[in-house]
Amino acid sequence: MRQLEIVGEATKRLSDELRQSQPNIPWKLIAGMRDKLIHHYFGVDLDAVWLTATEDLPALKQTVQSILNRP
Image (cartoon, rainbow, N blue to C red; front, side, top):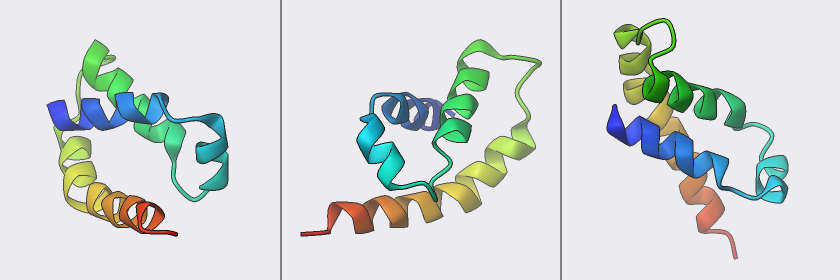
């Protein structure tokens, strides 16, 4: 879960320009997950964490890698 917190925190530090250039990435949801994990709002849904870690993060990683590999 700590890695999800780090990803969410990093998302908040990205420039508005970068976030706006990638509207297909759910930036607010990523940051929101971080907030829920850090502050334990209404408890942490471990099923949602697992789904994020196993399905959403691999897709996000692929997208970010393609952005970084652009000339």
